[in-house]
Picture (tube, rainbow, N blue to C red):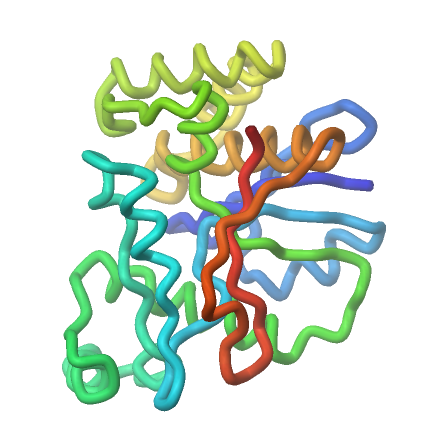
Length: 236
């Protein structure tokens, strides 16, 4: 079983994965490329919402996740409704979302809306059963690798990067070297430091969860109107 973590980046998607104990990584331009690159049984944690609100259904998991992250709750964005997700015009998307959910869309959400749309379309038309994509969140994963304590430092600071690399190295001795390798071999305009950290923690949490036990956050709204399950994975 190949186990990995995926984070959206300017260059597309950063995929970090482990196969038979060895780390590898790729930057793929579209999520569809997973079908070409990973033909063997695979499981990926991905930092992107799976299962969306729409007219007649509201995704509510973010309430639980914000409670989990306390002072870092701002790292949890409200996903757009499916109708707003597929609307290319930003202003119209905001209006659509406000009509359906009663709230507009933040700039952070608008900036990743195209990635959410790409992933949603992929999942709704995916026929391969070779791999599984499971929603996760880097800061939730960091919290539970840190014995349930939220990391207060920010990934945008050198201290925040150091804190997270030190924590990841406690679980995998190759984590720091892989981080350095990806940093050296990619351009910052396509792959940022925090993209590497996020994909890396998702990969490590995925592997630990597979080998031991994977935990999930869920609430009463467990499936959207298109049949996509709403759950967020982590390891503790």
